[in-house]
Length: 241
Image (cartoon, rainbow, N blue to C red; front, side):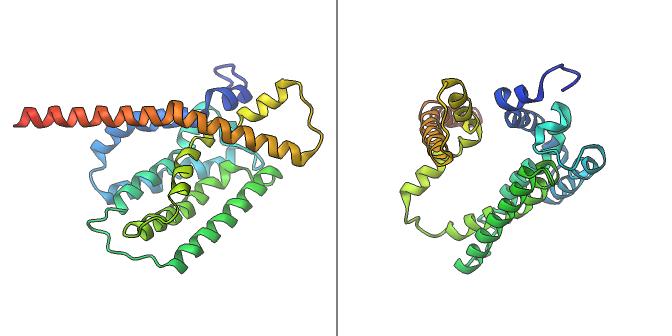
């Protein structure tokens, strides 16, 4: 961030560093895919992608709390393993080839283990003992197995709580909205001395803003992208017919 002369707090709060990372990853995906032609190649690339993570232990202070603290360029490569796990999951979860079965007991183990791993990594970062740049890429591996277990468990099962499924879809936008309630409370001029009340107000604002963002931005654009995809597929079919 020194090269761009931009304060890291501005980059983190207003630009959305994770969005910058996603734009970069999806931009290079077609090129990367042309070289990585099978699942084995993707796994090798994933292992190599941990080089910036391991290098960060030697060039950044261990108590650095968040990803964007490493700078605009380095964060693109630091976050790459998390994104690659999503790509690998798509390959690994192929239902036509995947005959594995996950029982409820194993699924619950993954859920509990993932929860405590997330809790531990977050506490270590908040207490400025070991920051997220040094833990989250390893936590992502745990999250990978948890998410894969959820998908495999429910692939042939009816979801009993459809409302929770809808809430889950809407809650995906939390990662974009989570800093905005703090800003609104700060600049509203309202001072909330009671920590419990502050916590309640924060989550009330966060839930409301996340839901509004979902119905006004995320859901319409998801629908638009699917329509574009379907039209392109129809055009391709017409040309080959």
